[in-house]
Amino acid sequence: MIYLDNNASTPVDPEVSDAVFSSLRREFGNPSSAHAVGRRAYEFLEACRKTVAECLGCSADEIIFTSGGTESNNLAILGTARHHGKGHIITSAIEHPSVLQVCRHLEKSGFAVTYISTGRDGIIDLEQLQDAITKETVLISVMHANNETGVIQPVEEIGRIARRHGIAFHCDAAQTIGKISFAHADAGIDLLTVAAHKFYGPKGVGALAVRKGLPISPLLFGAGHERGLRPGTENLPGISGLAKACQIGARDIRLRVSHTTHMKNLLFTRLSTALPDIRLNGHSTQRLPNTLNILIPGILSYELVERLKGVVALSSGSACHAGSHSPSTVLRQMGLSDEEALSSVRISAGKDNTLEEIEKAVSLIIEAVRELRETSS
Image (cartoon, rainbow, N blue to C red; front, top):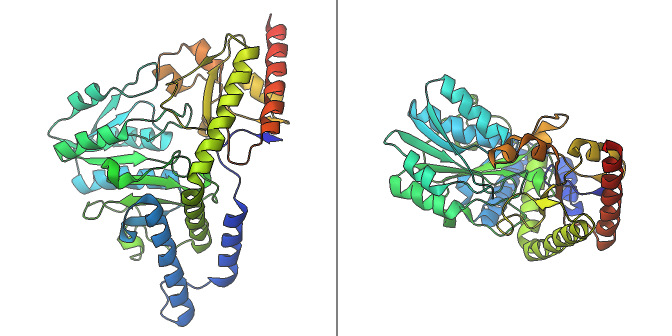
């Protein structure tokens, strides 16, 4: 099986799994307990928090551990909304469902929400964002890189706009941490979402970096864990995996960028040579080093995924929409027709893919496309 769906989830790095298993065996105490076993667990928890903070370029007391990207996004947006009670939120029309669905929920609760559009390149319209700001705007939420197209948004410019108007800026960076070099503090981001399983860590754990002094309200209620923002005994094995994944990502980021860029470019070169009518969706350079979203005329992408499912793992859209044959909302927002969106496939390489795998995958994809075109004709 050649795995080319790393934007959906990544294989757990062996160093990460070792850290998780070690924590399961050793750090079984409750970090809130006063005895020696509990104190050791607490010290381990805080060491992990420091490691994650160092990799993100923030301070340890700004890190709140969560169950993953969806919870972090919900805490950032709902937590800000609950603190203010009312107001206006700006987001983009191509966000992850864990952002869009929260915003739609808040609209039903009386909040005003503006959804900024993108061009064909998948980059949001900064002028439209600037014009949308009102005196009631309390939050701007824009993802760093899109999970379907890999297109990277101009978060530094968005951060400057937000700071200029005194508005909190939330950024879902689930797709960029561990894939490109990034320090969120330099980008003026107040709330940053991290998901471990997107960069070779375990599922079910993530973090929200909350800028010191920024007031948000909790979603859950219980004891005072995680600065009172996320009650519940911390998932030490998962957190240890997140911390190790952050540590490895910081150590290996240059190699990862170089390797996945090479794999991605080789994939596109080989495919476009054999299938000259294919087209890249989204900006050609302002994108993740590992991600291709390709329009392949004459096929339905879910049929291609089905045909290859035993030999090559790729995606006909976001993993969160698996099983759905409706056109990608992201691609439609970018101006693609329903037919074009339904003919588009996402291929996302990873740090462990080899040249031999890429060559084999290209051969299998080309063969499957030609067979599907012959069948449809």
